[in-house]
Length: 364
Image 1 (cartoon, rainbow, N blue to C red):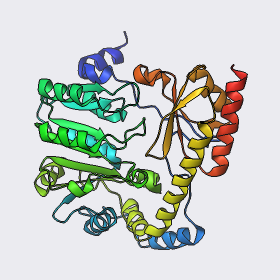
Image 2 (cartoon, rainbow, N blue to C red; image 1 turned 60 degrees about the vertical axis):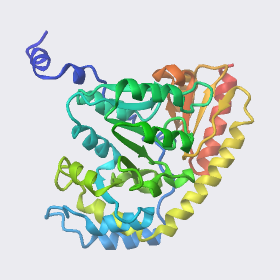
Image 3 (cartoon, one colour; image 1 turned 45 degrees about the horizontal axis):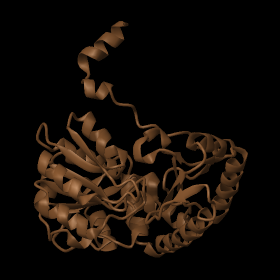
Image 4 (tube, one colour; image 1 turned 180 degrees about the horizontal axis):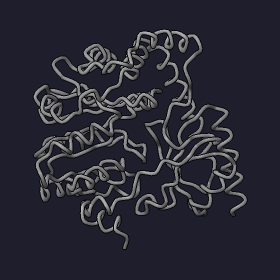
């Protein structure tokens, strides 16, 4: 054991050393269908106007610490109820971290699984107990009796519910979520990262439940590079979490760019309609392949399970063909032999389908 290793062992918490870093693969040169991004860029005239807007930025000054105009634009664009307040974050990941950092030591975190990995990852990095409650194997729905029993047993400080869920793509029954809200002793955070594609939301109920918080991000809408997430909730809760937020966490380029983009709602609304159409087409094509099980999706990605092939081998064949998707098989459990593909542009989807069919044929 080296001196450096000895010092690491002496100084760092065991739960941190036990974690694996969140791995993002190099996507250069690939058709990138692994990260649930909007595949459509901005029109040239919009880019020209945006660049002109950025001329007013002052990178030599600290950013606006309050971002009042940006918050007002987010409230208007997202139908946030009157009286609710917003917490802004460097992506929704930072908001999850802020929420968990504010909990009392030992506070328990709960979520159905499989779900967004950062709920577990950040909880464990902070030394907080994490309880994952398995979804139903047949359709990834919430087993409400099992979930309620887990709430009664563990009395969680906070429950995360991704709506729609990632990586499964489904919406949980809203009546089930209402039951969880009625029983939960602590906070319930509904994570609506994929709200533009879902056609369903709990945002209108913010304020109706004093312990309900709704989290969203601009990443899936088409602004992933800006890293801007936000959470809506009662002012009393937001004021407490704002104490944990680091100052100047929203940089000046993100603020100006987000305000600019939110004022051009029609550009992104048209792109969402295209992605919804492309999702329908891609889903229909995948359902013609009898060697896979395709799960219905209310997000901008589709989960599929290989019935007669090895997921890792198919993933590798797609990568060799220049198409990058997400291999979920290493997660094990309910995601064994599963792959997740982001809905791309029509040409990208056709390239994926051709490479996917060829991989299945060659590996048969």
